[in-house]
View 1 (cartoon, helix red, strand yellow):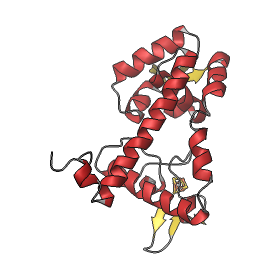
View 2 (view 1 turned 90 degrees about the horizontal axis):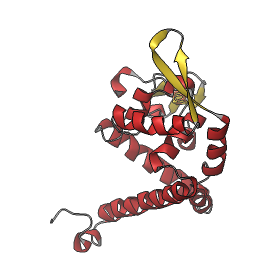
View 3 (view 1 turned 45 degrees about the vertical axis):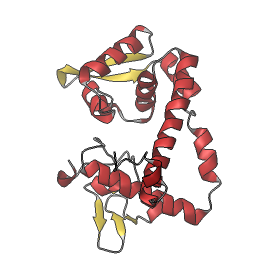
Length: 204
Ligand code: SF4
């Protein structure tokens, strides 16, 4: 009880606690915005999240097991959500020609229409972020990046496709560098979800 960031006595005397409470509020905004889409489409929040993931990631990642790790849910939970999406003809299963037990998921044209309708659900937040000045944005992004990496190291965020967990990432103590793209990674160029990411061994 004494340690709770929701204890206002502690919260109001600690910037750490206020930051955590602020992050909780922001998480609530995402949930609210997603539920709005849910009501409009008749799909559950996780079903919408799966459709959005399929729309923006390569087929190798669009598999039940990967989705389960991505969303920190069990494979049966993801399978149930995908079954409904398939029944509604929003996704189709594509057999893996190299492994008869495996298949990936692909959006159907109807699924793509739902993505077009819902993928901007967080844009209202982008508008607020866009109003911050450049220096504040970079500081905020650096802080978020460090928090997400730390939480990944603690196992609280499972799958990451961020620079610091990538085989191509190099850091000499001063400059972050991408060995694949062969560019220095200024703070605002560090990626959170990179299509070229390959997990380094010590990031698992
Ligand atoms: S490949 Fe992508 S994730 Fe990896 S270091 Fe380069 S920019 Fe970062």
